[in-house]
Structures are given as C-alpha cells and as structure tokens.
Length: 146
Image 1 (cartoon, helix red, strand yellow):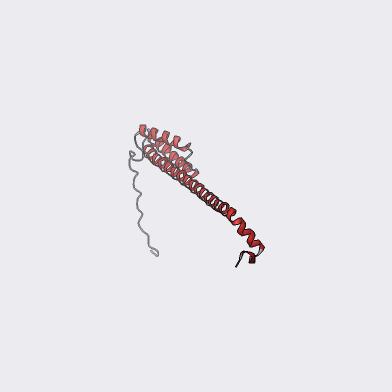
Image 2 (cartoon, helix red, strand yellow; image 1 turned 90 degrees about the horizontal axis):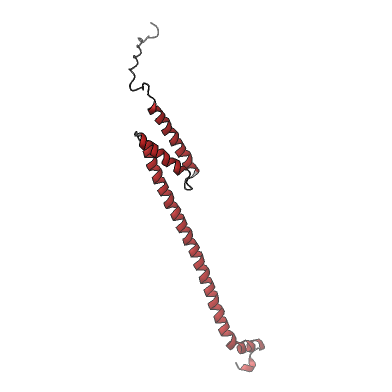
C-alpha cells in the first residue's frame, strides 16, 4: 500500500505516531508506577495490621500469665502471699487488656479467695478439729411381710 492509498484517519495516526509514541510510553509507565504504589500501600497497611494484632495477642498472653501468677498467690495458704495476689488481681482487673469475661472470672476467683480467707481467719472450732459426730445407729432391715 502506498501512502496515498491509506485512509485519511490512518494517515493522521501515522503522522501523529512519532509524537504520541513517547506520550503513550510515559502513560504506561505512570500507570504501572501508580499500581505499584497502591500495592505497596495495601501491603504496608496489612503488615501494620498484622503487627498490631500480634502485639495485642502478645500483650494478652502476658496479661494472662500475670493473672495466673496472681491467682496462684491469692490461693496460697500464706496470708502475706494471699494479700499480694489479691492486690495484683485488683490491678489486673482495671487493665485495658482484661475482657469482660476475664473480669467476671477474676471477680469470681476473688470472691472465692476472700471467702476462703474469712474461713481461715475464723478462730472457732473447725470441722477438722471438732470431735466426730456419733454415728447414726443402724436400724435393722425390716422385710416386707414379716
């Protein structure tokens, strides 16, 4: 095909081709850079979320480890250790890391520990020290028809 046999619009494209080629190349590079930048932002946001979640999980694990330590101390027979454990549990209750379920659980434990402490503080006779109650006398079995 000769240049004169080409349709008019194709001659225009051919004439502009030399000037449009670099512009199209630049637009392609700009679009690729934009897509890469958006991908980077999404990955960075996902990584930040993952790090936040991991930190929160680590903080919760550490909170629970401390709660277990405090529960062990609160349940100890030594009064001083019991006081330390109760105070530690009081502090752990107001932590931002304590969930509603944790608060209910620890309050129940504190109630049980305080009740047990009251029982130990009672100076009267305990069931272990009291004399055994006399055994009930067994009645002979009566058979029906006798």
